[in-house]
Figure 1 (spheres, rainbow, N blue to C red):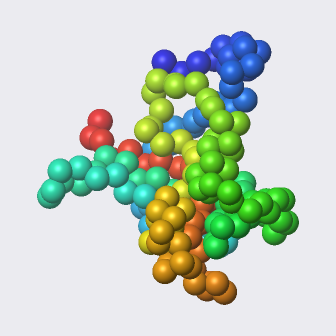
Figure 2: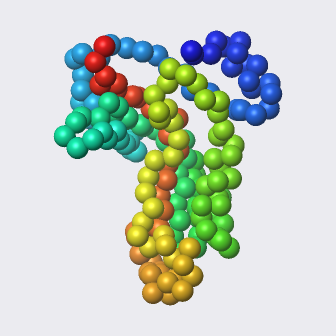
Length: 170
């Protein structure tokens, strides 16, 4: 059951949630996820496409497309940068793992579980590089640290604009 606007406002007033997903269902019999991805790429410099996976030999139910990220969190050589658009919002040295910075950001994005929504309706997308292990395994830090490298240890973007294609047969 999708909550009404009144129910969502009541949830916000509890102080537990600041965001909730909103959806609009459209019949898409003439556009494919790849064609839509190409169109989104014209409007946004950062996009993604995720395919859900089923058992081998079966097509997954969901295709997720995201565009126009709200922010980007990157880590390289112990420094985490948070950018909104082209503006550097914060830069901090990691005394621990960058995941502590991500956890802090995620805690501000708690939202209620909502029935009738796809399994992913917004959040972080990106990657953790191979060298990310140096934050957990300190003895590897010297061997894996490549100062000046253009490849980041982590690059995550926060997407609130997500389109979900449902391949389930009606």
